Structures are given as C-alpha cells and as structure tokens.
Image (tube, rainbow, N blue to C red; front, side, top):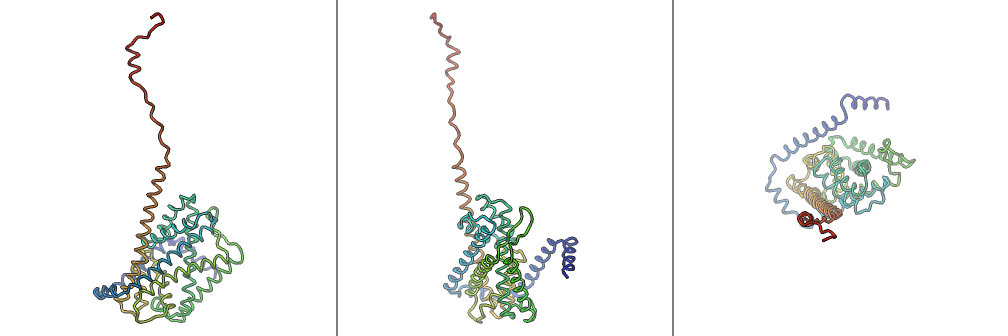
Length: 353
C-alpha cells in the first residue's frame, strides 16, 4: 500500500507537478464560490442588508472587536513560539508581536500568506540579524501551529456535530464523523511521534527541529485560542434567530476558513463567504450577509489599515535613524587665493634689501 501511494505521488510530481495541481485546485474553488455567490445573492435585497447593518447593536460590534483583538493578540504568539523553536529566543516579544500582527494582517488581505507574510517578516527580522533561511523556518513553524490548531478544532467539533459539516461536504453524518476521527487519529499519531524522540525535517541549512511533545501541545493551545476568538467574533455578529450551537458554528467557521485559505484568494474573499452562506442556510440571507460584512470590516480591513500605518511609521523611524547615524563630512579646507597672487606680483625681499 505504501509503495502504491509513493508511486502515485511520484507520478503526479513527475508528470503533472504539484504546483499545477495547487493552482488548478485554487481556481476550481474560486470558480465554484463565484457560481454559488451568484445564485445566492442575485436576488438579495440591498435595503434589507443596510437595515440589518444599522440594526446591529453597538455592544455586539464592541464585543466582536474585542474578540478580534484577542485573535490577533494570539497570532503574536505564533512568531514568539517559532523564534524559540528555531533557537532565536533572544529576540524580544515586542519584535515577535510586531512581526506576527503585521505579517498576518497584510497576508490575510493580500492573499498568498506564505509569501506576503514572509516578506513582511523578513523586513522586520532582518533588522535583528536573521537571514532568509531563519525567516523561512519561522514561517514553517507558524504554519504548523495554524494547521495543528485547525486540525484539533475541526476534528473535535466535527466529531461532536457531524451534521454541521453536511452542507459544505455534502456527505452523510457518519462519513463526516469518520473523517473527523481520522483527523484526530493523525493528530494524535503526530503528537506521539514527536513525543517519542527529537524530530527534524529538511536537509543541511534548511533543517527544522520540530517542537517536542509538550511544545506541540502548547502549539495546539495557541491555535485553539486563535480560532476560539475568531469564532466568538463571528458568533457576536450573527442574527439572534435562529439560535445555533457554538460547536456548530465552529465547524462551519473552520471549514469555511480552510476553504478560503486553500483558494489563496485575498482574505478568502468570496470563498469564505459562499461557504458560510451555504452552511448557515437557516439564517435570513440579508441578516447573515450583514454579519459577514461586519466581520470582514473588523477582522480584515481594520487590522490591515493599522498594520500599514505601523509599518509606515517604522520605515520612517528607521530611515531617520540611518540618516542620523551617517558620519559627518570633514570640514572643507579653506585655501587663500590671494597669497599665490601676491607672491607672483611682489618680488621676494633679499637680505641685502
């Protein structure tokens, strides 16, 4: 069986290429999302959406903003944890917080988070002596934290409420629960694997030491808090009726987030929204759309603007410091032009004179 899987993987790598498969998958997800959104929103009542936006209570928005802040605060620990994993624990938390917040705020909105977020990270960490390989390792460990958290949340929540994933997967509850249990089995196997002995991935300078068992549990906790805060923010912006369980919303939210991530669309735009509209079919579409718009404003646009302002101020300060650190040029040597003329006109006086 293992040899067969290796043969299939080698065929796709040699004959097709994983990059082409990834691009095709992203385009397929985006195309399906566009079709779904067209059918679901073509008869939407814009006035009702505006009315739903205005009807959202200020305390709902305030609590949602608070949970979004908690989510981005948790994201700072992605970088803080990664720095200690690669052996650069001397980098202070404030630098990790700056990198974690700005890289995710920019990456979430521009898309292709691995590259855009990595570029922001390199700009910040290179000032502290980290090279491109070390920044790539940070991105890898941070991404591992993201996937471990998502696998844990999706595996537990979907096994408890497999019916919630039905509108997205179009599969029976028993199959959804089976998939969730497989995810949890793989997760537990990975934890046991890194717990049993030190593990490394890569070769040469690209070798990454994987977090051990206890550290992996810390990773999972970080991911759980991140997704928990995000789900709570979405929870606060949903219509009051009908009332759905928090576990149900978590299954839907994580599934929609992963689909948006797989599409590489900026902020999962269109894909995340289509998945939420399909899965939360029991809500009034106009009310749900208003909640999604507010979530995008709070989770995507506001942090993006704040991150750009912070990065802009940082660049100005760095430029000012570099300019002030430049050595002053030596004073110009003043040479009298009248002395040579005077010497040429007036003859030298001799001792006889």
